[in-house]
Image 1: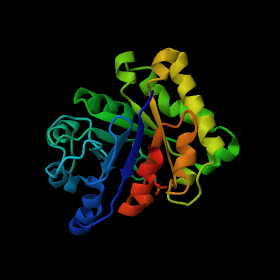
Image 2: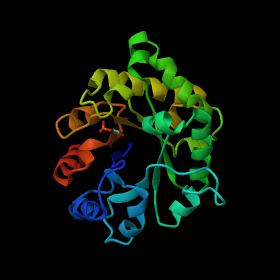
Image 3: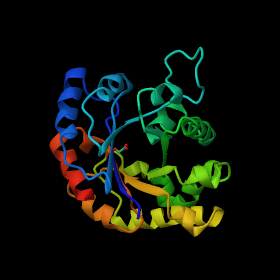
Image 4: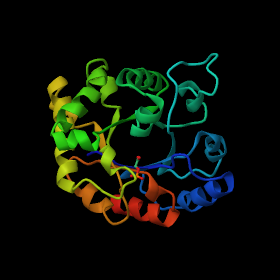
Length: 251
Ligand code: PGA
């Protein structure tokens, strides 16, 4: 059975003091690590301090971005190699905001995925369509195009370690969640792509998360749908009491 993953993407929020206040109650949460894996993705600058805090077996640290080169003269960048030295276990790749503001193309996402896997960090590859694409009815093809580079490059042993996050761009930060049916049919479509490229057994091991205006009220219903293996939460991960309710909904 696939474990539920609840990831909190803090994006570019919180001062150092506020970040500490947010993580402290979360670290005390009672989480069964056999059933749920919680991943906190704060801004880079807090990772070092957080990695030295008391360990909660149900919680691990993730990053929001990484560069695909290992080290070198790349001012301002952080590599997977550096992240693993802090014990970071997950890293977002191709979040729609990175695609939009930093021109993160599918081919760059593939390089990032490979670099993360080399360091044994789980890439959380984000895919999803803009509103115009959904309205044009081409959302399934759009997501397929975003996934093809990894599907056709990674080996079966690597592909099972990949986490996919389906985040319809029109649902991110807008308060508009995809309906459970819209999310579930896209998740089934994604899993089918893995089954066609590899086989059903491999496809059944891939975690597919939903993201886009997830909150404490809709998390349970979304996670109860068969192919939805967890949630990637933005805004609702910035308040510990709200995020704790979402973690509870996974249990
Ligand atoms: P949101 O963001 O929950 O604020 O919609 C989700 C995300 O961007 O990962």
